[in-house]
Length: 125
Image 1 (tube, rainbow, N blue to C red):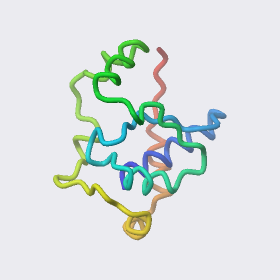
Image 2: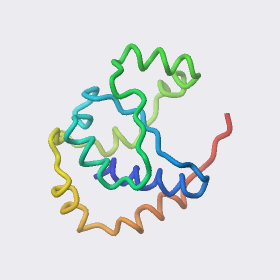
Image 3: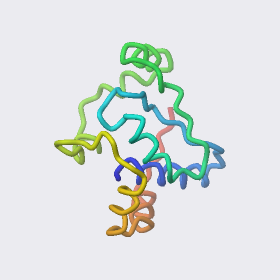
Image 4: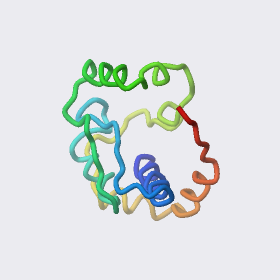
């Protein structure tokens, strides 16, 4: 559910900035949430093309690419990110679109996206 929320936020930011796609750092099987079933269930709500350039890369390749593009150092900084704060103890590895759609019915998704967008900060490199 969290990944679907973040995808919606990313698409709203894309709309505000004129981006034509959303690019993620997902790699198939790197973590429990990145199974083919979960990638499908999360991506099912996408309205823009969803690009996953690292999909087939292993951890070593991903680290090398992060170093090459200058994002590795910030990715290793100690902080409480959303993944550690909201990560379930036993993540589902085979979610379905229907199950996630059903689970979202108890939330005001639009309000949650609006709240996230109200807290956006821009960092210039």
